[in-house]
Image 1 (tube, one colour):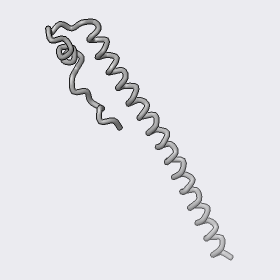
Image 2 (cartoon, helix red, strand yellow):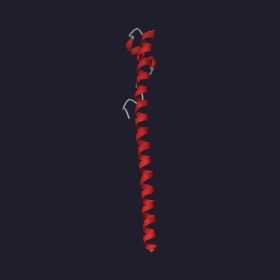
Image 3 (cartoon, helix red, strand yellow):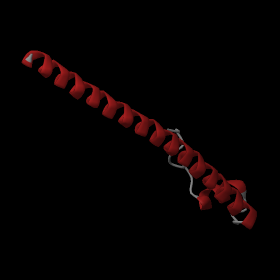
Image 4 (cartoon, helix red, strand yellow):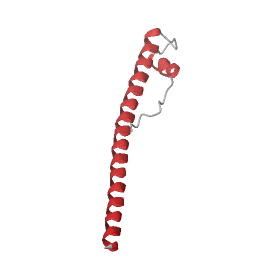
Length: 81
């Protein structure tokens, strides 16, 4: 995941940094919101990619378990002969 999971400044603090006068302008807030939305979308993409990988790993694990069960069944049949 990204190192930017938690912002260091909230929108008001960011606005004060961008506007030395201390006034929060609509443009400043829009910039902070846009950056936050960008971060959220990046995290969402990372989460979606991680979910795909987790689902693939789960499917592989289920196939491995099924293969092991089949092998165990074949070995039991061989012993019964």
